[in-house]
Length: 202
Ligand SMILES: Nc1nc2c(c(=O)[nH]1)N[C@H]1C(S)=C(S)[C@@H](COP(=O)(O)O)O[C@H]1N2
Ligand SMILES: [Mo]
Image 1: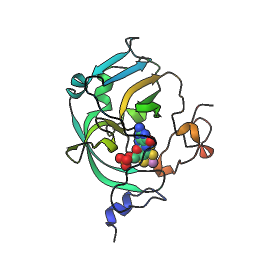
Image 2: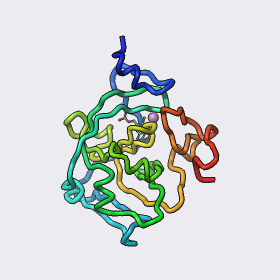
Image 3: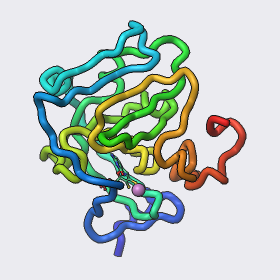
């Protein structure tokens, strides 16, 4: 029997599977700390790209978020604890210019997902280095992935390497391949054909 409180926390059309599946497109990258950096580019407040090295990024203040995680293929992972750097902390380290309304989060090999700034700025949006108090495994996104628990999990980019501040919204990897630009699981925003005017770029 599923836990009744978990039942209430399930968005429409979702179910809780056994275990915690690993889902991604393409290969698992190798982490080389001396070559790794996190770039914050696009419409930054300074007009310059900021590049955080691994020692710089991993020294940022940490927090934890306990949240559920909903894949558009209809499984949900309930009550995971993610530890890492909140998106707000990263934004304070490398702020956006006025007028930025969206961000593109980039992973290794060109995977990307776009977010409204309001979704990026949520307290629960975290650049996670840990899952349930252990470093992420390679296949979960080591060393760092973003977790945006209130949106479908394709937006939770693994192996993050860059954040691009956008003055105009642009579709990411799956948003450009038929998925919904916003991806709110509570509204079942799965596919682009469900978009209302204003939900996405033309
Ligand atoms: N870089 C990258 N991140 C990604 C993906 C991907 O293909 N590449 N897939 C996304 C999808 S569709 C899902 S459901 C989640 C799965 O996360 P998990 O493997 O930790 O369950 O990762 C997301 N992040
Ligand atoms: Mo997914």
